Length: 220
Image 1 (spheres, rainbow, N blue to C red):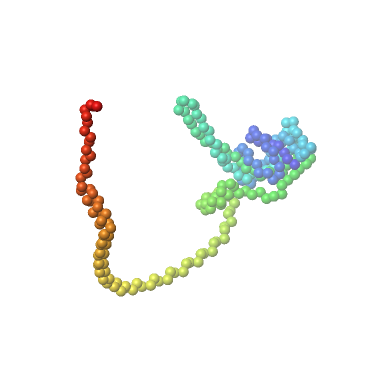
Image 2 (cartoon, helix red, strand yellow; image 1 turned 90 degrees about the horizontal axis):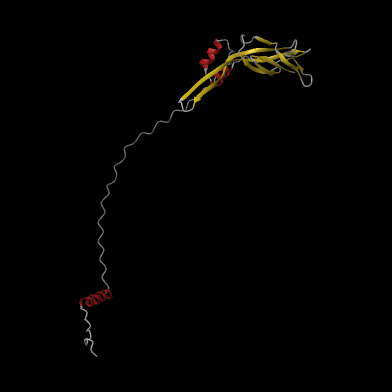
């Protein structure tokens, strides 16, 4: 069975056992909250619609925490005027656990245990912030179950002492190597000498000029 309730100017569809986040309500953690503005009630085809409210219907819930919601950014800009403004807002909200719905001769309740652990405590536990956990516990938040201590790690064995350095023996004296004998130049082959001489003699002889035939001066 579900119900549609109105609170904080908004409408919510709830069932027993649901977690509901609404606008801020007065009350302490663990207090019982009752909503009498029920707009609809029932299940399936047996839904009873109010005019505008269902007579005698009510929804009961347990207040889990009152906190600040996520930040909403408001950005304003005017074109070509150099105007930009950024603002932030965090709305205060209340978290509820719906426990019972009654009305129209029917009722339904939730038999589970209500966990009053706040979101701030859950975040602090997840991040391991002991100082924040202690501050929240001082404010009346549920105590945190201490984790079992971790076994101490075995210490590493001490390193073996280094061996003493023994003075090294002087290095053996290396005698300089004897210079290698120069290689004898290869004798020039006689055929090469003959070729060289022939070319030189031919180059030294001047070339004889060819005699030009005498011209007749154009006479026949």
